[in-house]
Image 1 (cartoon, helix red, strand yellow):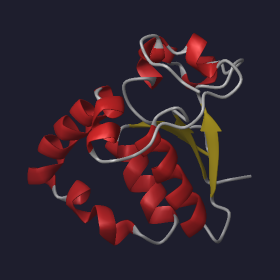
Image 2: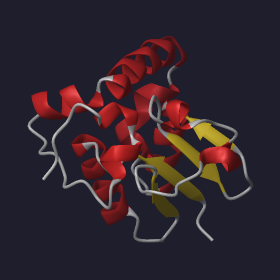
Image 3: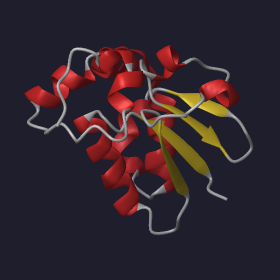
Length: 140
């Protein structure tokens, strides 16, 4: 069993790239990844709605504790030995500002992905039809 499961939007170019990076760094198999955009995904076990998961990254530790937003990032990076990359998230005076910036980024992740040069992935098995954030997007 993995120490942390990350629930990410696989149709978000930046998100998919970030999960691929974490997967590559995870030599110890401490992380698991679940694409919330795939048909049939149900967030009930996280006590969250799809709307909630579309606004921030959720994760769940092996003990069942659910982490949200920057807490998910901090846990994931720490587990793969890259905690130093997210050290500002540990600094109390920076934490609130960075959490606010993260939420703004997450809510605008498709626009931000495009601005940062990330290409949109193909829409897997009708996932775009069930994700309300993708209704206006065209996928191959």
